[in-house]
Image (cartoon, rainbow, N blue to C red):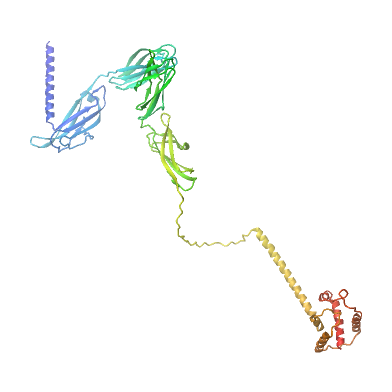
Length: 615
């Protein structure tokens, strides 16, 4: 009894001390020129860890501080994030920092932050002051705890239909759990699923699939995990998956496998009534989307398609559960699981395509334009297997581009018509889908050619160039040969000309030397050439006159030869017959030239006769 009284007295004393301390603190706080607010992201700990601390300091006076305010952490270091502000009256300054709670902090049960500030005394003198501001923390015993939920879809399945058994494990304890494993019944799966570690406050899930046969299937599971060096086990009760005939089939599809967070994906639900009765009052639900469609009717033997557009927020699996009424009988079925992957925007590929052209104006068609295409990886990860194309025609392939790296290619394109030209870059994303990045548009136009302005010709004097004269004849061989032939002919004709000149000179000299005297000259000058006729009288007188005027020739004694010659001439004259065109014999100069000796004899006879007549 005495012990109880002593214990009660001790407790009362503690309470009184606490009240006095609180009152003192409130009294002190009420007289401080500042107000300090501390907030921790967590106050109970099972072990040392990092927390977030928010500090806010307010000037509660009516005057602006003349000295700066600063905050020190539990280790006595100034918190630079807070700064050293001069707070106006009523103004505040705050900051948020990360702080590692140590085992020493847990043993002390508190975290104290010190604030320095200006303070004015009763005499109005300002001085610097500081106070510690404390928040309590505590260390608790680790208490692992998980919650296991199971969803079977559909509850009734026809033969060959896929049934999904989904387990969701949530860690609702204060410590992380590790080595989480799920063992299902052998009727559902012969494999044990490994889930891994689940931090406190988080959850993970795993799905088993089984194909319905011709009898019911029983599902149950054992979940094992570890925490704080100990092993724990959770049991999941039996659940029956019923075999039955359902005249309604449901199929769920999507227009893509997923997308970036924020992208839209269209889901299509196809409902087919294979029975002979209409199915009415159909409701479609999903664990993630909740109620999707309501009050849907599918007539007997008909098919209905329903579409739902969703926005990607995270990677998830969608499985629609369909319930309705076939006459007065309730039915239930479900689609298969449809996984959709949400791509982290930081991991999404990002490319830019910049195109320039050698010209954007052509004057004739077709024309050739050189395009320069530059592809740059503006993402945070490597871009692989990139194809550069235009109008579906592949122009270049890029194996890989690192972040920030560029690739440039040039292509000469024959432009057959004007218009817009664009080059694109395509690659596959994490889903295996082709993602195309469009380049800028080049507008090519046609213009009439313009004549170039007339320019004043600029005469540039040609520089003196010394050329070396050829030392050899560079004429063709055929010309050289022909020149040799001509040279030979020249000498031949020259020799012939000399010979002809010599012969001509000799002939002239011979004629001059053999020229007849007196009568011969008269004979050659006479108009008559018929020496067989007698000379008319008038001509004879002329001849006589000429003879008289001519110097007399020395008379020579008649010899026997002379007598014969005269006789011969007389005989000729005596025997002459009357002249006729046919019988008359005429001596011409040509005949005398041909027969020189005969002519000379005839002349001698004539001249001798004439001479005698003159005598």
